[in-house]
Length: 58
Image (cartoon, rainbow, N blue to C red):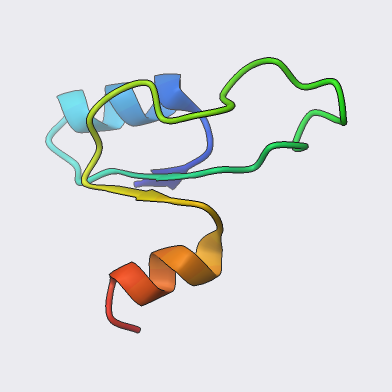
């Protein structure tokens, strides 16, 4: 599962899915205070979708 929300990725990992956190620092606007970083261990942590694609060998 690819997401920018730590809670979603924790739930997905708990169900046995692979996880990828993609940083989206202004998803909620310029004053965003949540989901600014990967707060848990995930299979992949990427700064954006191009970075994730590179990590996946695409």
